[in-house]
Length: 111
Image (cartoon, rainbow, N blue to C red; front, side):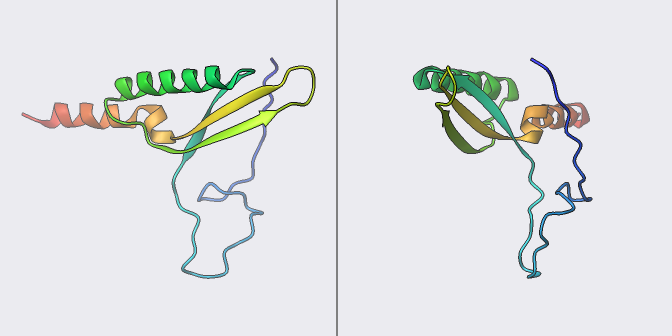
């Protein structure tokens, strides 16, 4: 598999500079970072089972429930190998282990 890098032109909020701007001051692009975690398989139950197993392990590692904003299911039947793709849209900070670091800092600060 060849890794391809895409260079994005982002503003200070982390959104594309060409994204149409919001006209009303009450509207906003929230500063919440979520990242998809993909599970792809030609068998939907297998993809779902792997995503659930990973989520259980991740929550055990994190020490708290993983912040999952959405679950997206996609199906592609083009080409020779149809597949299902299950995406868990997870909080970026949880994936980075930020709650663990916060708890560790609090533990060290406590007498």
